[in-house]
Image 1 (cartoon, rainbow, N blue to C red):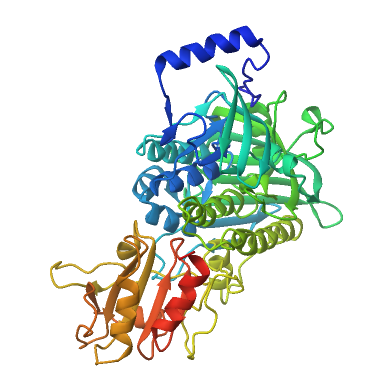
Image 2: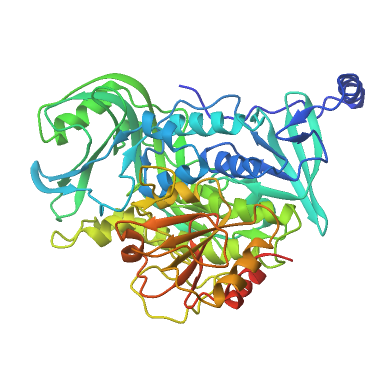
Length: 576
């Protein structure tokens, strides 16, 4: 089985060899990497090319930021480590412009079947409210990485594989990074460094961040295997056996994968595969090399715990893994940031980890791009830690509780549980960069909360209704003015402020209530809320302006929509 050992460059092969490489580079001329010239031209270095690092790099490149992305592995690993794709992640990919490829490669997750001692205890249907555009899905991590890597390549950026960040030092003006790769050692001067380099992160260690938490004593094994049985595909299966003390002492978890009968199965490690942890940094988390279960181990667990007769075959890969639960004391220090497993690790219960990491990168990238452009408020980058660390703390705590006590939706009202697992309840109402006073009572989302999708928006030319997400896609900040079109003094002032901003900074739309007319004083695109979905989902009772941030959260909710409120929000985000 392939290992995840780093491929180290020839970093100490002597000054003569270094001079030869320098001459070869000079003869070739400048070498373009990730939207910039190799060397000092890279504004951002992303360390780690898993789903989190790829998201960060893609979002930076989509906004024109020159960056490089390096990964110590020589090739993408063919492992289905992280599988579950949450609806919120699909919304993120929608706005990025990559969701179609993900939908074509994924399989749906309809629900979960729970068995205890061979008896079915629960059939949980994972059904979300109709206004949520995407459901739960399963996609092997190697497919997620392929899709994001191909998306990144559209911007002329490729992963520099076999290249490892070995050290860095920051000062007031930037970060000096030492890389070791196939051509040897390189020193790179960059303005920012983003560590997406996993549970054993060099970036986290280099910053000296505390990584408090603990580890589970149990060892587990994973396998990508075909299981033939009469249980419905598209449902996860969780089967446990209770010991004499009434606590689970044996476990089988099966998550569907693309392909006939394919599952990623998780099980407890048998004694013959068990061994003490040898993590050199004390963080026992993730796949371990040297010990790989074979098909007989998988079949033995199925024989004990499968609720229906089952046959396992066609083992593609397997591994032993351990689980820890830890989180850093801060997500950034100066010009250096951590995201994903470099910042938080926890049990895989509920498929929260990779999705949380992708949204770390999603939150950081738009802010970092403004900082690179010199347009960010001096405290905007501080909001990354303020917004995302509370999310990480909640996810770590919740997944530990679920792993130790089990979890289940309330049969009478499963919606809150499912919305939280779908990561649709994540929000930043306490963020220092949202406008918290909106001046009106409402039932819809407030500042810092997710901007929900809605349908039934009709224009003057298109003869088919649009979704709100169609208007938000590939936009930065968006101003949505919901109005009946009645003359109002605030409209010209709001329009003058919005239209006077630098190109691309804010896109404005008018959303008209039934029977409304285009607002005088604003030459914006107009859409009608033909089915009243916008008004219902956003709790609109009077003319209201909403500022939707680039990451799909409300930066401000303005009732009445005076220009002063918009100006106050913008002043907390932008430098000018």
